[in-house]
Length: 448
Ligand SMILES: C[S@@+](CC[C@H](N)C(=O)[O-])C[C@H]1O[C@@H](n2cnc3c(N)ncnc32)[C@H](O)[C@@H]1O
Image 1 (cartoon, rainbow, N blue to C red):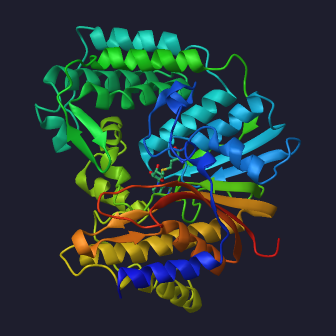
Image 2: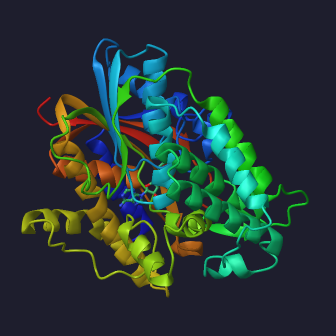
């Protein structure tokens, strides 16, 4: 099969959707502006969407301001959806809200859940806890445990010894304060401050799929970075509780595992899943997770990768299709949907990794959509944001149109694709394809 044939296949999938160029979404599918906003700015997740996306989506699904907004994000990331829902309540743009999130990454779940909890019940004495931690770190009696075994922490060019030691003392001081009975949410916020400081203390910078070495001419010390961020968090805490219920739990967005079955259905399920673009969140956010002890050895590192959506080929998993989680008919539908893509995978040394990833990705997205549908209230909407990506090299390049693949899966799962809004066209050198784009896709129950 050629890429022309693949484009023809995409055109067939597109026939089931109303595709609309929607440049008004261009700045909403990226974290544009989040770094300047209270609470959103506590941790910069490059793959987040904008804090203003939710409001725009609510407008486009004609969500009235007098109803309770019940929103679920199965790929919560840094918690943009839940915090945006709280912003809408605080600004009285919706009367009431319940927001739940699911996130697989330990550190990111800590960030997202702490943000929501801090808005629901702002703690009073974070500055006092930070002072106590500072005293413990600077104390002559402070012990300095060994850094995590992850090799990155042991490369002198990446971390200065003194900084690693201070990071470890901060960790111990927080653990000790917890053991001494400090407020649980304040401890969580202290850990967010520590985790969010680690990159800035190193000579590493997140760059797409990897952490890249960059010699930073000026770096704060670990203690300065920690105190600065804890100061920002204290400053952002609201004066009054925001009346929003819900939680961000650590679990699996594909099955919504960990999300109590008794929770009332949601009128909006909104998410941006990992894109099939080889970004391995476990790798990119490894420093934070190892430092805080969410991952302590190589086996746990591998297990964490396996818990994530199959959007990257970093660990070759057993062939995900057919999956015992689905019946024969559903497996056959997924096989048929992914086949045209498998046919264009170049026969190079990455072939098997790519094929498995594609097969895994359709399984994971199908499970996500089915789970979202099960949690959806009558008349509710499922909205996803996803980017399409180029794979392969030279003449073997092809586009994975994740927006259309997921739309095809949604149809198979009994949802109707109301519209596919093209937020922005993406540019890649040597590739010109109408499918290279980032989209916001609106789904409804087929019978609504
Ligand atoms: C594109 S990001 C979501 C960003 C989020 N919308 C925000 O604005 O912060 C995708 C997220 O999915 C998470 N993830 C990957 N596999 C997962 C799984 N199986 N269950 C839940 N979350 C998962 C990643 O850790 C990452 O945080």
